[in-house]
Image 1 (cartoon, rainbow, N blue to C red):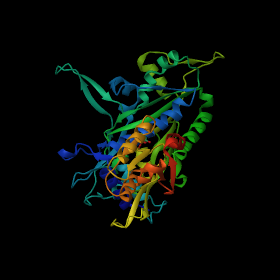
Image 2 (image 1 turned 135 degrees about the vertical axis):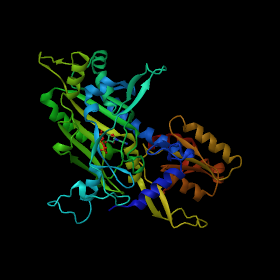
Image 3 (image 1 turned 90 degrees about the horizontal axis):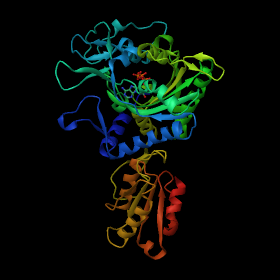
Image 4 (image 1 turned 135 degrees about the horizontal axis):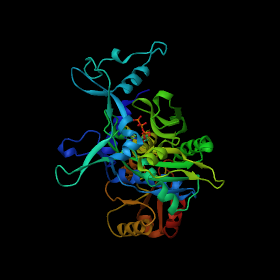
Length: 457
Ligand code: ATP
C-alpha cells in the first residue's frame, strides 16, 4: 500500500535533523540534487564503510580501486552506452512535462483492477499532471557530457561516468598484474555516477548525481552461473546483516527485453517502498564477456586471459551494483518507527515519538553524552567521558533541554546509547547508560564505561 504520508515524514525528519537537504536550496534548488547534512554524511559513510569491509577488507579475492569520473568519449562508445543507454521519453503536448514511458506503463499495471490479459498501450495513457495527450516515445541518452580545456574551439569532449564499473574495466589489466591476481577475482569501487534522468521523483531514490558501490568479479565463463548465484546470496545477506527487514526485500529477475545491452542475466534486489511498492535497490548482473571484449576491440589491447591449464578466454564478469543513496533511503525507511510517548516527559506536548531503529554500525551517532546539568562538575565529567571514547566512537555532547527531550532527540536520529551523568555520579562514580530500543537503563562504573561501550560495538 502506497504511504506517501510516511515518505513526507521521513523527508521532513531528514531536513529537520540534518540528514538530507535539497541541493542549492537558497537559490530555489536544482531538481534531483540533494546534499547530505552532518548526520546524513555519517549515515551514508557508515553504509559505504560496511560495504567496503564486507566486499574488500574481509576477503582475499576482491581488491579496491578509485578511478576517475571524467572519461573520454571512446570509453562510452566501447561500452555501448552512447548507442544504447537510453530511456524512452514521452512529453505532454499540453503542459510539456516529461515522463519515462516505461514508468507510466509500470504505474498503470500496478493499479488495482488492472487485467494482465488486456495490456494497456502507451497511447491510452494521458499525462499524469494535466490529462493532456502524450507524444510518441523518443529515446533519450542518459550520459552527461562536458568539455575539457580552456580555449574555445579546441575543447575536448569528455563524459561524466554513467556507471562506476567502466573505470574498473579500464584498469582491469593493471590491477590484475600489480596485485598478481588469478581468476576468479574481483575489483570494487565506490564513487559518483551521473545520469541525465528524465523523471527524478522520490527524494534521493533517483538523482542525476548519485553514488554507486560496485564490484566486478572476473571469472571463467564456465563458472559464471555458480559465481552469479553466490554473489546474489552475498548481497541479499549483506542487507539483512545490517538489520533490514527481510519481508521488505525481494529478488526480481529482469525479463529478456528489459535487460541492459550488456546483460546475459540480471536480478534486482527490490525494496517495498512506501510510495510505490517494489523498487530496485541493487542489482546483480551477469555481463558475459561484453565489457572486456569491447574494450579489447576499441583499445587494441588484448584482454584474453590464459589460465593455469593454458586455456584462453575473455573473462565473464559478474557484477554486483548497489546504490549508496538508495541504500541510505531504504535503511532510513526500514528503521523509521512512530511509537507511543515513552520518554515520560510530562511537559512534552506530542502524541507520537519517532525512533530510528538503525543498526548500530549504521547509526550516525553511536553514543550521546548528556550531563544532567550544564554546570561544573557534571559538565567536566561528561566531557572527559566523551574524549575517552571519541577515538573509536562517534559521539554527540548535548546539555540543553530536559533529559526526556534529549533522549527523544537522540531516538529520532537513531543513537543506540545515551550516557547520562547526574549528581549521584559524583558520589558513586557511576553513570546511566540508556539503550535506544529497549530503553533499558543501567548504572555503569565510570572506570568500566569505555570497555562497556566498546564491547557493544
Ligand atoms: P532504474 O531502473 O531505477 O533506473 P537502473 O537499472 O538503471 O535503475 P543500474 O544501472 O543497475 O540501475 O544501477 C545500479 C544501482 O545504482 C541501482 O540499483 C541503484 O541503486 C543505483 N542507481 C541507479 N540510478 C540511480 C539514480 N538515478 N539515483 C540514485 N541511485 C541510482
